Length: 303
Image 1 (cartoon, rainbow, N blue to C red):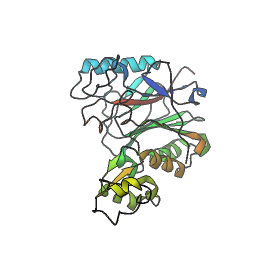
Image 2: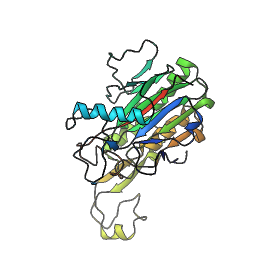
Image 3: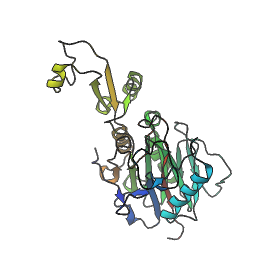
Image 4: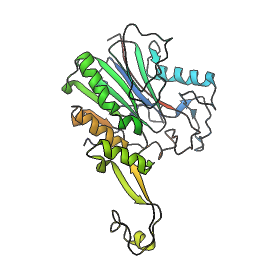
């Protein structure tokens, strides 16, 4: 498995955008994972008393269209990508990937959860608030892709399919591909039901590596000897329902390895969106009343 690679903040103070260490070697590439900092919105979940307002980049009920437009403009300015067309798909937790070319039209509604292009001046975007954004780069052919992977997209192998699109549509080679898995909800916080666990067990031979099992209520003996009963029920206490925690970052990293990417070229953000209210929106932590981050990637035409 790849080790977690910290995404760097571009300023000493909290930055609107996180970027990937090492990707600055591609001068033609623009990319980033937004945080909640540097915007003009005041979200219901801004309970951290931050000095800056929220950089909400998604169309949510509590925010105005004017604020969202200004926030998106600020993101593009920060990335020095004002001249690029921001492509914002209507995400539906699917495995649908759109390939965009010179015929791209901003008037068209792009419904799906993946975008790919080799066309300059298109800034592909994915919105998240716990799900994982994944950015892909072919450094040789200058091809980029972005996918939105919640548990449904992960179950449908969306990241692996995006690599397949790059290979079969454009001729990408394994050794030229890079991937960045952005901030999302970690295994520390992402509790799922038995039905989700069953679905993954039916699809992936390594599913056991993706889940952590805990007991909903610990007895005194379980608290005293947590390792003893980590995988076995306490025979001296009442039966308590199991709860499962899913590691989506690991699941997607393993899919990218299966797709042929080198471990050294898969960057995984270490931050959990639910654990860091000072940096990220989190749909689960904030009970749905939150904003949206945006992961973006594109090709500059000037290099």
